[in-house]
Length: 325
Length: 291
Image (cartoon, rainbow over all chains, first blue to last red; front, side):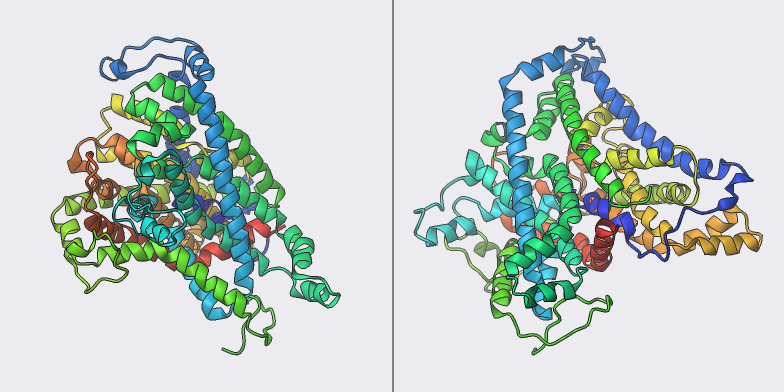
């Protein structure tokens, strides 16, 4: 979901502030609070009805044995913590949790490290090449993930895919043109990793680049004159300056990558989809493919609680970074 | 090109000076650009090939001639027009509802002070970070009970739920940028709260409305999972489902047509991204580095 993802941070201060606009209308005291109340009510009702109530219903469902039969008859039993006990005592759950954490970690590390490298590179380019890199990054970023998932499956298609053909040409790994990458455990994981990192790097690289252009250049020049190496300059000046931005990028990446579903269900072949399923995919498959809605709901609640922990760090960070609430 | 600017001084007023071209960095950057654009290039290359050059043992890195046959096959011999219509109905309705409600809510949250304001903002932020299935499962259950699954209204409501919070958040930045003095001047001239909102604030926040409309469009246009779960009747499919439909369950895929379809589907999104990119990056950095 690149759209909303982008918006989260983009909106924070898109236009430069003329002055810190302390939310105004000092005369609100006189006509009472009915104006903001009227303004907020429609959106508030919609968010409450379509988001908050469903979340409540999800929690309720996770305490029932809601399944395929319930979808038709409406009958279900409240089973208390049974679903949670089942989920938490299954080896599948812990395997999926470990997989999700490792896979998310690998995707976040890949995109943040490459993004930092690219943003450094962009500082050293002529304007034409920098413009070219920017356009390339934006195009990769903008592509809808349904389309890119299909493109990547085609890139690795056995028999006709261009990447296996190129790898074969290297004469290092032998002939891999007939290998069914998306149907092998590691093949699917690597392809999905490449796909997610490919689309995540642009946001990070462009954001860090924009942040880096705000560093006072005279400081860096002074360090260079004093004989500091480029590496030293990066570690002592650039990196501390980038810390807050880098922190936000990392937290956002964790949240987004933890939630990756489309790319996994669209790229992974049928045989490996369940073996590589992350928590999100697993709860989706349990609730919709197997119609074990109660169990799927319990997995979703557990996932939500895990994510809320990370989200609260994000919100605390935003508050600390001086964002006016 | 004898000179380069060391810093992207887009109006930041950092002085420009002459510097030697860093050949190494430029070469690495060009190599990076080639690698990074390769999947997109391969999509275009495949889409514009004649049909018989798509599936070859040795890949053709350039079409022997530009051929629209893949596009004809993708667009004419499928439910493209019907699915496009479905997508447009759902996306545009989502846009109008979310932007209208978002604009009012955003005004309330930025131009007024009242108890619970911060709590509302935190809830709006937190809601966006929920895992997709946490909303999808209960929405499906409730909408299924109300017979809303498989209808435009059901899909529109689900999209409004996902788009509205970030629309409020995006427009908030634009509202905050309007100086309080403008409101004060209008108030001195005798304008009431509503008059100020409609005559001063809403017109000034138009760029924010456009930006959040584009974000909302992209988000609803791209959705695959919700549409896949909600829409069982293929006559109600939206474009992401159409795009995935070139793969048949038994594994056969018309890759030429699918790549052509990917081009058609991605084009509006990429164009919108390129339009708002300047806005995007400067906004992100100002937001994250500030303070």
